[in-house]
Image (tube, rainbow, N blue to C red; front, side):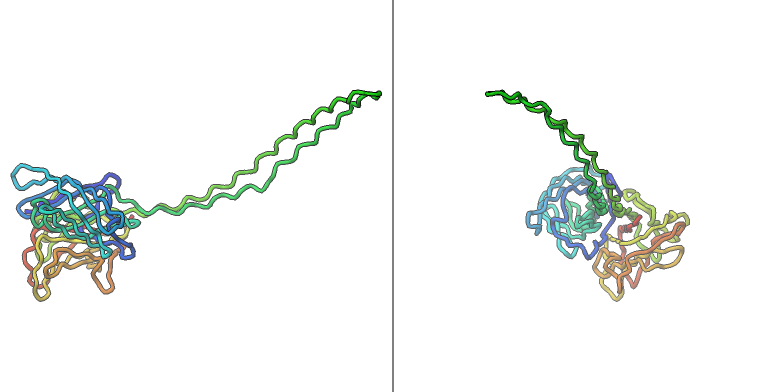
Length: 346
């Protein structure tokens, strides 16, 4: 049975699993930097949690990391390891993280804002946890900064000139060697002109966009069909129980846009004619085009990279009811543990 841990960051909620970044953003190893919280699950009733600090090289072609990871396997006492190694983030959103003998992970980055990665979703081996599904979540998720308002104009009004001082009226006496007359007194200084008016303050630029992440993680094996409450679910620590009927009490939508549906399973459906696990968002009981399929030997999918053309967003109105439906296509094998996330743009 799988356990997973997803950490909630201090300023906004964490991201979920395998949400692809916008294709317009230029990614490299400098896009992955700083501290990321780690949550993972694996075979053998194993879970792991801790943190990783990424430090990119100066040329942005790779980087190094240090970490502190706590491993818990079934009823055995938890133990801590501190692996360190290297990583490479590529322009196609993939990332490789490795430390000899301890870490061998392959994954995708997501939630990229201003070319900075906020979430990594990977699979592989982590400090003794075999076939682990691992989430790396940055400490904050921040929207883009709005433009600066214009500067107020300078004043064009000059202050008046002060009056000229009066000439001396005292003349020196006349004589053979008469003394020089005294100097006249200096005129008084003119008063200072008034300051020009201050220009108006420019308008404040608009705030950058904000996002929330909703999802679930479950140890329930996939069936045909099976359902999960997706919108409004932020408790990604406690395992969620999938149901054979559509839930009757899913959280009403508040009016926004859903995008970047991303799902992962512990076991691939297996290579065969049309074998797949399909994850689809249902809106008010009707199928939508926000979906993704895990096929053949894959163990993950994202709506950002599927569809012709890809349909990667869904507008929801206040009061809409949102649920996730999972169906089996072909004759796939048992899925094992599974989880999904979706972005909500406020």
